View 1: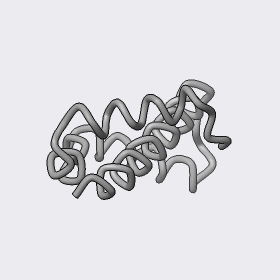
View 2 (view 1 turned 180 degrees about the horizontal axis):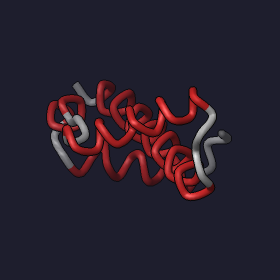
View 3 (view 1 turned 45 degrees about the vertical axis):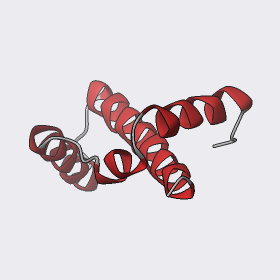
View 4 (view 1 turned 30 degrees about the horizontal axis):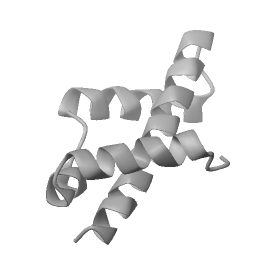
Length: 77
């Protein structure tokens, strides 16, 4: 994924809008974690339908954004 200016701006916004500690401590809810684990299991088994493929791609993109935001937040500490 290429870091475009709008992508970096979004990360900076998130990193600057909350305390760095809050961003670093952020974790998805247990419900979301379970949904992602279920999708990963289905993907490994090769039984994902089209909607589930979209969902796992979406979650992976969001995970990347969250990781980048947390990395940027660490610079503010």
